[in-house]
Amino acid sequence: MTRFFQSCARALAALPMTAALLAGQVGVPSDNTAYGTTAGEFLLLGAGARGLALGGAFAALTTDVSALYYNPAGLAQLPHGSAMVASNRYVADTKYTWAGLAIPVGGGTRAFGVQLGNFGFSDQPIYTVEQPNGTGGTYGVSETFVGASYAQNFSDRFSAGVTAKFISDKLGQVSGTAMAMDFGTSFHTQALGGRLLRASFVIQNLGTTLKHSGVPLDATTPRPPVPGQVDVPQENQPAALKAKDWGLPVLFRVGVALDALSQDLAKLTVLSEFTQPNNSRPGFSLGGEFTLSDIGKSGFYVVGRGSYAYQSDNNLDVGSGAGFATTLGGQENRDGLAGGFGVGYKRPTGFGMGFDYAYRSLGVLGGTNTFSFSVNW
Image 1 (tube, rainbow, N blue to C red):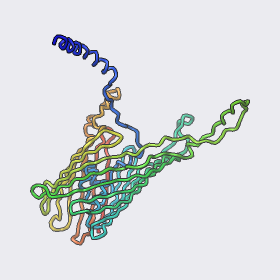
Image 2 (cartoon, rainbow, N blue to C red):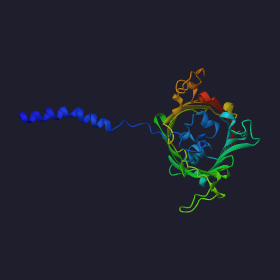
Image 3 (tube, helix red, strand yellow):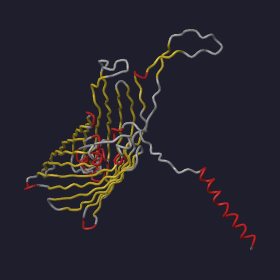
Image 4 (cartoon, helix red, strand yellow):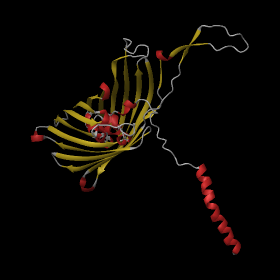
């Protein structure tokens, strides 16, 4: 028994030493978030003023043509053909434009659609070290994606959809291309009290890498000397700089939408969504949409929307983090707030048109204004 207690005492005495050795070999995991490791960030700019006013928490409520972007499964819920055009004045005098067309077929059990998105600017002066006042030339950026979607209802409660995208990225005379896929599902049922509940699971921009090439990457270089021979002057040989390929901004979305109030002429829908990108930390969005339909039995409707979206940049300390004081007046605290409205007209035959507006605060970068126009038939 004495030997047993002695062995236990030795083991207890060795624990601190063992822990110290392990601490020296096992470190605390560091943050390995892949910031700045993807290209084609314009793929995350959204589509339509409605979705942007709701902070992007729109994957579960995709009941219009912008389902092409947010959740292709929502196309199967469209009762009529639809088209939309949206324009977004982004930061630093850049512009983002999105357009989509969706057509239900098979009695509404299936739907097809196409979409186009473009981001960029043009006519920017070129400055160099040798010519700091400008070379007299200009350059532009044009990032574009084209997508084709298919969706199908598999039951009265579940639908799924897929989108294939072609992506083009042009910076001056340098360009690159990539392919990507979106997958989406939509589940809808009656919750407690007969309220409609929708849920969605979506993954976006799953595809190839983006690699650039073009004339600016062309170069000339002398041929390397031949071993064992006298090195003599030679003419430069044509060559090309090899650009690194970059992945696309893959985004996983899980959304829920509930009709908290649903009457003949008034409806209030609350939404929430969780997002997990591959190039940043997770985020979430909360939003609400209130609709007054068929005002005065005229067919006109009015919609109000508001939301808050949290992303990893919302907690950026722009003052001390950058090493200087700031007098931004709390602009960073408004980052992620968004709101907007919509007005439109619907006829019982299915024809209708609508106009939507959204404003979204980007904190220290200011805000964006988005306008969209849609038509149904």
